[in-house]
Length: 318
Image (cartoon, rainbow, N blue to C red):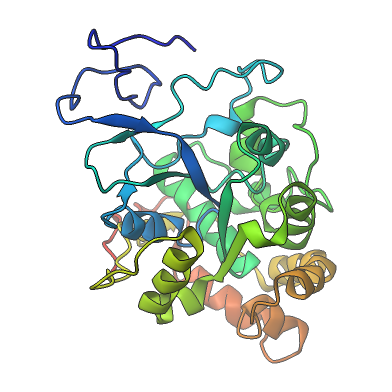
């Protein structure tokens, strides 16, 4: 990466293409390194959490959510260039800055790269039922790109029995779009994460509980980061829930039953490591016989239109 100057001795903010811009430099007082990161899991409320934290008076906002710095495969990680990896400090009360990229927990070697950057990083991860997360991931892709894989391909074309430790020999965009199943192996991801960062540097939240009592979750988060608690905690307003419906093939009960068995051992490992209450998760309920895969398939199918239909527009969520 190049490290261009704004002409005043300060680096300019980064745009979505990774380029420095001149816009918005007038009020920049300094630059802060990133000392915490929201690392996962994708489609588990990380945008809600990040957006709320951005409102905290002691937190300097990153140039954007999902900086994707540690998933870069064009970087020479034997000599990484951190010169542009910082956040603008615009107010004297800004004390810390964070990077919210939910792929980091899953991405091969990302956590190791983060440890090399700063072994004292504090890490936050939010976890959602793996089947609900997987379906939400697929509907997001189908809502954005008509070329995105349909459900049958999405759950079969890259279906390892564990979290990949190295990138497969496929284009990165293919891996990003077809790694949905692998992203649900939370137990293995936590186990790997704990070999890199000690337990005291982690905060784990459960998706449903976080949304059910968002002020309490924000209290946990601010305490964890050493910040003052919000005087008036923000509400858990999601920016976008995704498309109301997508065009494609709906998940079947057989699909979901097979995925439940695929996740079963890892889910037990995850619960033992995290000690989070996941009893209400559909995957847990199906495993215990309290829910039928057909019931979950019916719920998912309500958001899928058969091929040839026109998908509905995305809807705002409370």
